[in-house]
Length: 527
Image 1: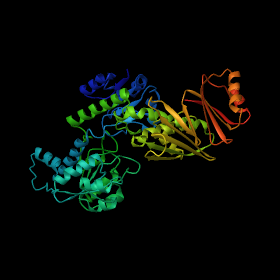
Image 2: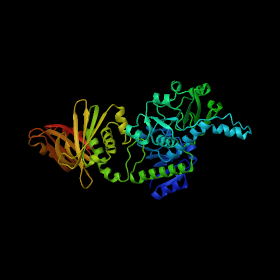
Image 3: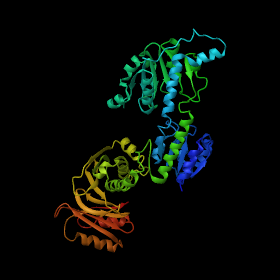
Image 4: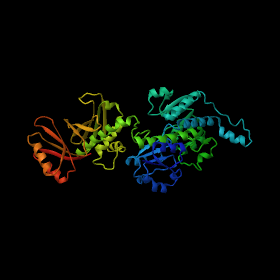
């Protein structure tokens, strides 16, 4: 039974979901704040469910020897070292949709509060000042709202703003024209958005590309009297530049739910009367907190019990329906990659993977990740299916995938080709009705071989007597042959023998096989 640690506060219903799936769960909601204690106990768990309080650092992960999945109840994963988790093969999931409406509504609330100076007017009235003429606001109707980041939350904000009769423009490099049309926004570049918008709201992740996206230069390009809303991430706005723009009147007001440093204390922006501040309340509604808690419990449980992957940040998603069909093909892809990887002795420049037949209509991304893992595993022992695509990219290995309808004799197959400095080596395989992977072609030579844990691969000249000599030698070496598969390009040309054997070959035995007359290559393969 897999075991999950909940180290931040989740609802009782979420904890019950783990139990209903048959997952053992320890609910210790204050443990996430104690990094030393977390380090001590994390090694016992297969899964970790967190909110924002738990910091999953590289040090914590170094002790997480059994951990398979981290689930974040919410969107932001700034508190998880994703590269370190990926290196260890740990799936990192979030719940990107559970609090989307709540966050979007908070942004709209802040925008309206900013337009009508509601917090300051409230404080003034409570102080019995009744300064009716002081708080002259602006309407949002017919104003232009600029949205930076038109993803799930940004698109909901756009919908609500359109209900308020606002003109909505959006900057998002990943926003397709048809999607922009669907959500009713005008897609523009950043400079145009800065120039035209009366209100600007941020809904983009914090990356190196988006850090300080609203800088001093950006403020200089804006309309006089623009108003800024940020319910996304601290660090998107240069706070010093914002302070200067607010003081000068360039920016009429700002409403901030997030800050560069949190908890925000003694922030200079707090001194300004035209700033509204809330303590990262974007996801803080009863409905949102319950939604993300239930969702993360479902996702972690489904992965640990059924292999279903949802909303993973470092691995392709696999639905519950896909998992049974994909599993044998993922296993085949890994085996083909391992086959080619074990035979590769020079630097890999590229990997080509072809999916033909019905398999091409499946979710090929997990198969590609498995194939790359198989290719790189023989030379990089600290690698896994999760980390393999990123490692291939980091090493400059060009990965090309192709999908197509059935063209050959087999209804479905995968062909993997490794491109090195000296040559290309291809291997193809399929999955039979029994679910077992089989090799159907090596280096363009057709064969039919079941992949077994221990195999011997031999290339030789196609001449009489070779098979007899090989069998005799293996008998002398006390190596039992479980299966013998042969193939050749043409009479008298290159030939391949692929043997399933009991036990493993020693280096000395392998040298004797390589020394046989006509043998070009002899390699022990492990699967």
